[in-house]
Length: 176
Length: 177
Image (cartoon, rainbow over all chains, first blue to last red; front, side, top):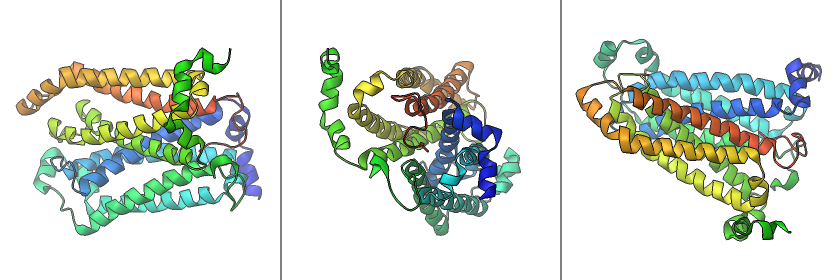
């Protein structure tokens, strides 16, 4: 595929392929981004599911901006890591599964933010936020929180498996 | 001298059932690695909520209310201490010789000391300040910033363990994601 070859020929791709540091540097960024995104989302999920009840849910609106920031770090580092190894990854079923999970996870996070009215809280002053009161934690939000935990766990598992799968639709190496 | 004679403690850890079960399983190592990532997300996420608030972010959150997330930090740490110990028992000689591993362990120890300092010295102040509605003082802020910085460096060092394990070739066998 021409597009994949074009990606693999990016200067940054060749740097990752050839240098000793390129690959671990971008993976380190990817892991930091993961910790920020999942850190915030998992805390939001457990709060929705009834833990840490003294912590106001609306305060997560500001923390969510950090989660999206972490997501941008991971989108950029992810695209670069993909570009470096595009033809292998594009047929790697663990990679495809991970991308599916990430898309579902982002949709879930977006739905939760919307239901919790986060955009309004984010731009509100403290006085306005106090006037708005706390969002109601509905049953559908609890389902979304469970879905979020499951989806992101699967994304991590699939992400790990990418390393152990070298050809399409087959497991190889010592992982299995 | 064989490695076992040089490092009797490492050999003892190597022979513990924790290492043996991973060595005898084809999937347990990968499974524990996933758990290690999840544990880290709990640990880092909980700390992010607390540390960012102490540093002055999202001031609307009552200062002491963030601490409700600390149990999750401790759960995450316990998951990672256990899975980490298993990884070490799995291949103690390789890890002991890995400079990234040593740096990571020193950083974790530093983070632990910082957490101890926060718990012993700053925690009481934090509750008093929360009751009076005061902002955190410089000591608390430095401790919070140190916490976030050290844990980010722990992630980086952790990635480098894999990158520089055994050989200098990163693409030897399989890439790691």
